[in-house]
Image (cartoon, rainbow, N blue to C red):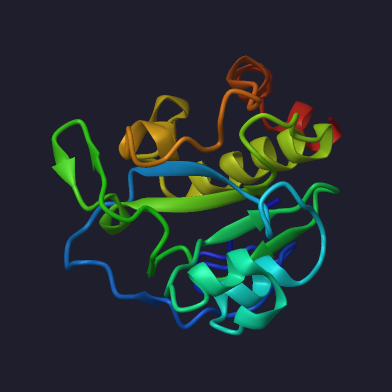
Length: 191
């Protein structure tokens, strides 16, 4: 897997542009990845609802939860579905609106310097094996283009917004991801 250094898109991803992004502040070095968990509605997987949320087309009348969030203007750079399908909403060089009010190591506004990757899942429901291997392969591709990102700079949404966010939750196996990253790019492509 590779990131196109000209378009900042991942060719292996289905590209569905989100309007919920803008330019990063001038001179910003992209040096962090934030891992999120999302299900729409909560605890349910599949369907068009994540795409609809990130493209401002979520039908408020379809579910009570949708009525609460339909007016949100949010996005992520990428989504990894349960089967490993990769969807890209925002080119990596642009600022996606994924982190909200956030801080990491004394730096505020994590959207400015991070890449947001959503995993289709829930805090207390095991993530799928295909998601771990796809995430590791994606991280290697991202680190190749953005060398300031290292495995130590891959963090949870809960790390940058403690008390406000809990994702990707206790079901996410950080040791499993770290093992794939230590094994190298070839191993993650085979996993």
